[in-house]
Image (cartoon, rainbow, N blue to C red; front, side):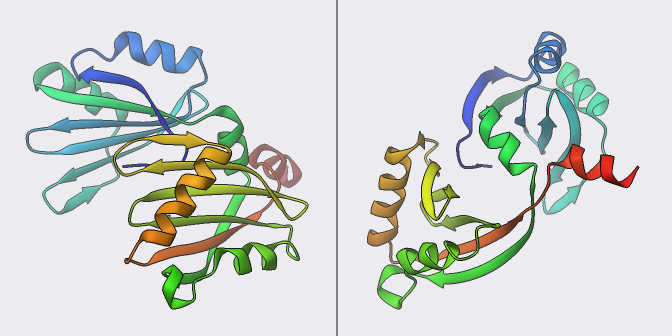
Length: 200
Protein backbone atom coordinates (compact mmCIF):
# COMPACT_ATOMS: atom_id res chain seq x y z
CA UNK A 1 0.00 0.00 0.00
CA UNK A 2 1.52 3.30 -1.08
CA UNK A 3 0.62 6.94 -0.82
CA UNK A 4 2.53 9.82 -2.45
CA UNK A 5 5.02 11.32 -0.03
CA UNK A 6 4.92 8.52 2.54
CA UNK A 7 8.19 7.33 4.03
CA UNK A 8 9.07 4.32 6.14
CA UNK A 9 8.92 5.31 9.82
CA UNK A 10 9.44 1.82 11.24
CA UNK A 11 10.18 -1.60 9.77
CA UNK A 12 10.54 -4.81 11.75
CA UNK A 13 8.80 -7.64 13.56
CA UNK A 14 5.16 -7.23 14.57
CA UNK A 15 5.78 -8.37 18.13
CA UNK A 16 5.21 -5.55 20.61
CA UNK A 17 3.07 -2.52 19.78
CA UNK A 18 3.13 -0.93 23.24
CA UNK A 19 6.07 1.47 22.81
CA UNK A 20 5.16 2.23 19.18
CA UNK A 21 1.58 3.02 20.16
CA UNK A 22 2.75 5.50 22.81
CA UNK A 23 5.09 7.16 20.31
CA UNK A 24 2.37 7.38 17.65
CA UNK A 25 0.03 9.11 20.09
CA UNK A 26 2.61 11.49 21.56
CA UNK A 27 3.98 12.55 18.16
CA UNK A 28 0.53 13.07 16.56
CA UNK A 29 1.59 10.61 13.87
CA UNK A 30 -0.31 10.47 10.56
CA UNK A 31 0.12 7.58 8.16
CA UNK A 32 -0.62 3.88 8.08
CA UNK A 33 0.71 0.60 9.47
CA UNK A 34 0.91 -2.55 7.35
CA UNK A 35 1.08 -5.82 9.30
CA UNK A 36 1.79 -8.95 7.27
CA UNK A 37 0.96 -12.34 8.79
CA UNK A 38 1.03 -15.76 7.20
CA UNK A 39 -2.74 -15.84 6.64
CA UNK A 40 -3.70 -12.16 6.49
CA UNK A 41 -2.67 -8.54 5.98
CA UNK A 42 -3.85 -5.78 8.31
CA UNK A 43 -3.71 -2.05 7.59
CA UNK A 44 -4.16 0.48 10.41
CA UNK A 45 -4.83 4.10 9.39
CA UNK A 46 -3.69 6.83 11.80
CA UNK A 47 -4.37 10.58 11.71
CA UNK A 48 -2.95 12.96 14.30
CA UNK A 49 -2.00 10.15 16.67
CA UNK A 50 -5.47 8.58 16.59
CA UNK A 51 -6.19 5.10 15.21
CA UNK A 52 -9.09 5.71 12.82
CA UNK A 53 -9.59 2.47 10.92
CA UNK A 54 -8.38 -1.11 10.75
CA UNK A 55 -8.69 -3.03 7.47
CA UNK A 56 -8.02 -6.76 7.41
CA UNK A 57 -7.60 -8.86 4.27
CA UNK A 58 -7.89 -12.65 4.55
CA UNK A 59 -7.67 -14.25 1.13
CA UNK A 60 -10.17 -12.26 -0.95
CA UNK A 61 -12.24 -11.08 2.01
CA UNK A 62 -11.79 -7.52 3.29
CA UNK A 63 -13.04 -6.67 6.78
CA UNK A 64 -13.27 -3.12 8.13
CA UNK A 65 -14.93 -3.78 11.49
CA UNK A 66 -11.89 -4.94 13.44
CA UNK A 67 -10.54 -2.92 16.36
CA UNK A 68 -6.95 -1.89 17.01
CA UNK A 69 -6.94 -4.00 20.20
CA UNK A 70 -7.57 -7.10 18.11
CA UNK A 71 -4.53 -6.34 15.95
CA UNK A 72 -2.48 -5.78 19.09
CA UNK A 73 -3.58 -9.20 20.36
CA UNK A 74 -2.70 -10.87 17.07
CA UNK A 75 0.83 -9.44 17.22
CA UNK A 76 1.27 -11.06 20.63
CA UNK A 77 0.52 -14.59 19.42
CA UNK A 78 1.42 -14.69 15.71
CA UNK A 79 4.77 -14.05 14.00
CA UNK A 80 4.51 -11.24 11.49
CA UNK A 81 6.20 -8.28 9.86
CA UNK A 82 5.24 -4.64 10.28
CA UNK A 83 6.00 -1.55 8.20
CA UNK A 84 4.81 1.90 9.29
CA UNK A 85 4.54 4.65 6.68
CA UNK A 86 4.44 8.30 7.78
CA UNK A 87 2.96 11.21 5.83
CA UNK A 88 4.67 14.62 6.11
CA UNK A 89 2.60 16.99 8.32
CA UNK A 90 2.09 19.61 5.52
CA UNK A 91 0.68 16.93 3.21
CA UNK A 92 -1.56 15.54 5.97
CA UNK A 93 -2.98 19.01 6.63
CA UNK A 94 -3.68 19.51 2.93
CA UNK A 95 -5.32 16.11 2.45
CA UNK A 96 -7.72 16.61 5.36
CA UNK A 97 -9.41 19.45 3.48
CA UNK A 98 -9.93 17.48 0.26
CA UNK A 99 -13.07 15.62 -0.74
CA UNK A 100 -15.10 14.61 -3.80
CA UNK A 101 -12.63 13.01 -6.21
CA UNK A 102 -13.47 13.54 -9.91
CA UNK A 103 -11.80 11.68 -12.82
CA UNK A 104 -10.19 13.92 -15.44
CA UNK A 105 -8.35 11.75 -17.92
CA UNK A 106 -6.80 8.33 -18.34
CA UNK A 107 -4.27 7.17 -20.89
CA UNK A 108 -0.62 7.52 -21.90
CA UNK A 109 1.49 10.33 -23.32
CA UNK A 110 1.01 8.86 -26.81
CA UNK A 111 -2.78 8.52 -26.56
CA UNK A 112 -3.46 12.19 -25.86
CA UNK A 113 -3.45 12.25 -22.05
CA UNK A 114 -1.62 15.56 -21.67
CA UNK A 115 -0.59 16.72 -18.15
CA UNK A 116 0.27 20.22 -19.38
CA UNK A 117 -3.28 20.68 -20.71
CA UNK A 118 -4.77 19.33 -17.49
CA UNK A 119 -2.69 21.65 -15.29
CA UNK A 120 -3.51 24.61 -17.56
CA UNK A 121 -7.21 23.87 -17.13
CA UNK A 122 -6.81 23.70 -13.35
CA UNK A 123 -5.35 27.23 -13.35
CA UNK A 124 -8.90 28.38 -14.13
CA UNK A 125 -10.33 26.26 -11.27
CA UNK A 126 -8.18 27.06 -8.20
CA UNK A 127 -10.53 25.18 -5.87
CA UNK A 128 -9.55 21.85 -7.49
CA UNK A 129 -6.59 19.84 -6.22
CA UNK A 130 -4.87 17.48 -8.72
CA UNK A 131 -3.60 13.96 -8.21
CA UNK A 132 -2.74 10.98 -10.34
CA UNK A 133 -2.03 7.27 -10.25
CA UNK A 134 0.09 5.45 -12.79
CA UNK A 135 1.70 2.01 -13.26
CA UNK A 136 5.03 3.12 -11.75
CA UNK A 137 3.79 4.96 -8.67
CA UNK A 138 1.54 7.71 -7.36
CA UNK A 139 1.97 11.48 -7.42
CA UNK A 140 0.29 14.34 -5.58
CA UNK A 141 1.17 17.74 -7.07
CA UNK A 142 -0.02 20.87 -5.33
CA UNK A 143 -1.15 24.05 -7.09
CA UNK A 144 -1.20 27.64 -5.95
CA UNK A 145 -2.20 30.50 -8.25
CA UNK A 146 -2.03 28.12 -11.19
CA UNK A 147 1.57 27.00 -10.56
CA UNK A 148 2.85 23.70 -9.19
CA UNK A 149 4.26 24.64 -5.78
CA UNK A 150 4.66 21.17 -4.23
CA UNK A 151 4.84 17.59 -5.37
CA UNK A 152 5.14 14.19 -3.75
CA UNK A 153 5.87 11.05 -5.74
CA UNK A 154 6.23 7.50 -4.45
CA UNK A 155 7.34 4.76 -6.81
CA UNK A 156 5.98 1.24 -6.40
CA UNK A 157 9.51 0.11 -5.54
CA UNK A 158 9.09 2.24 -2.41
CA UNK A 159 11.30 5.23 -3.27
CA UNK A 160 9.65 8.49 -2.26
CA UNK A 161 10.58 11.93 -3.57
CA UNK A 162 9.51 15.49 -2.75
CA UNK A 163 9.49 18.75 -4.71
CA UNK A 164 11.09 19.19 -8.13
CA UNK A 165 12.74 15.75 -7.94
CA UNK A 166 9.29 14.20 -7.42
CA UNK A 167 7.73 16.05 -10.36
CA UNK A 168 10.69 15.24 -12.64
CA UNK A 169 10.66 11.53 -11.70
CA UNK A 170 6.90 11.26 -12.23
CA UNK A 171 7.02 13.02 -15.62
CA UNK A 172 9.91 10.81 -16.78
CA UNK A 173 7.99 7.66 -15.85
CA UNK A 174 4.77 8.96 -17.42
CA UNK A 175 6.40 9.75 -20.78
CA UNK A 176 8.07 6.33 -20.96
CA UNK A 177 5.12 4.24 -19.80
CA UNK A 178 3.03 2.18 -22.21
CA UNK A 179 0.34 1.59 -19.55
CA UNK A 180 -2.37 4.16 -18.77
CA UNK A 181 -2.17 6.71 -16.00
CA UNK A 182 -5.25 8.09 -14.23
CA UNK A 183 -5.63 11.78 -13.50
CA UNK A 184 -8.21 13.12 -11.05
CA UNK A 185 -9.04 16.18 -8.97
CA UNK A 186 -10.52 16.68 -5.53
CA UNK A 187 -12.48 19.60 -4.15
CA UNK A 188 -10.46 21.83 -1.83
CA UNK A 189 -12.83 22.64 1.03
CA UNK A 190 -12.54 23.93 4.57
CA UNK A 191 -10.46 21.85 7.02
CA UNK A 192 -12.38 19.15 8.86
CA UNK A 193 -12.34 21.01 12.18
CA UNK A 194 -13.63 24.20 10.58
CA UNK A 195 -16.47 22.32 8.88
CA UNK A 196 -17.53 20.66 12.12
CA UNK A 197 -17.46 23.93 14.06
CA UNK A 198 -19.75 25.61 11.55
CA UNK A 199 -22.36 22.91 12.05
CA UNK A 200 -22.46 23.28 15.83
